[in-house]
Image (cartoon, rainbow over all chains, first blue to last red; front, side, top):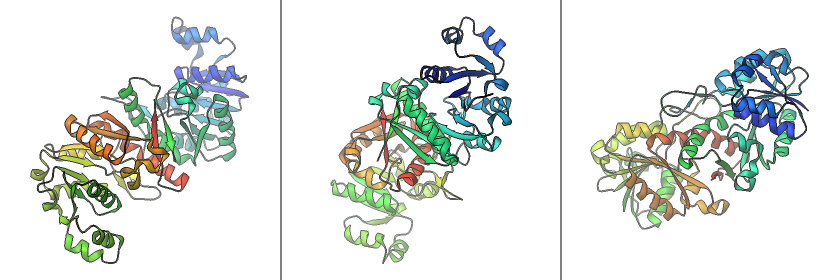
Length: 220
Length: 220
């Protein structure tokens, strides 16, 4: 598949590298590729771009052209703007995999800027009603998203939320190709409130164990 | 120990019965015992009170007299009022185990009436600064609270949050006496935001599996 990954942070790079490794045609999207390249010369992103020369870095407004799947791996606070730069016409009919979290800084641990009676995934779906939004993978660190077997023999849980059953089935296949076995479809896009509101617990588990390699298994 | 359990709902009764079975001296607290008895003649509470004649039903303002531990098993929306009726002087120095959730009704699934930058447990601790509040057991159904072995061979997780280390140690011992093995101390009382905000996910897991016998194991 042709897949556009929005966001050049650790999550976007990790997902893009894994998807490329699995044989997909992958593009990485950013607001301003020239500025991003200039800024990243001596950084981990610069090294990553050198090592992944077959993953082009493109502007948001061109990265999704011809793509079948768009992955939102931008910061939650920047997601709606980034998807807006991609453009509603480019998102129409496409699967949008939203892995972002609605985290905002402040004193102490981050809090959520939307929760309880709404969620980031719902805001994205509402802003781009013709996109087929699927929330997933937001409940663990990037390294585990693409390699669940790094922890507990891979026996932990990833969630799916979305209104489009066929889109969720395609995302389930992608997750299975990453090694996920316990893939739980919670239901429509409003169910993403659950996994998003789990983040504050995850942040405290991260603090408690001093490692981001922590996840949860739904026991039933 | 002498333990006062506030709340005559399923959670309060389940905890009271288990604590009595373990040999503790247990009292059940309610706002108005005469009215509660009259109302419950033909209900499950009425039968429970008959079957547990050694667990007296007392008014909030007398139930904690002489108790070492107070368990808040009232509805979240009624918790501060119930604890207020017990009275700050009666709570001073005592361990207050808060198992309630800040759930409120509305259209669709319940939402939280406090979350993100505050929690019910913090509100209780702030309202009764001399109480030693420990948040725990709010992340699963009553039957699992007192018998974790009913699910997954008991291999799932219960959380502890609180400012008083010695109080948490006493609560840990109580949890162990229920059969809990994976007891995770998240830290101070502010960490209760994590387990309380997990509830929306739990409600969706309940809906998905059609049973309340669902819990999570922290994989690390």
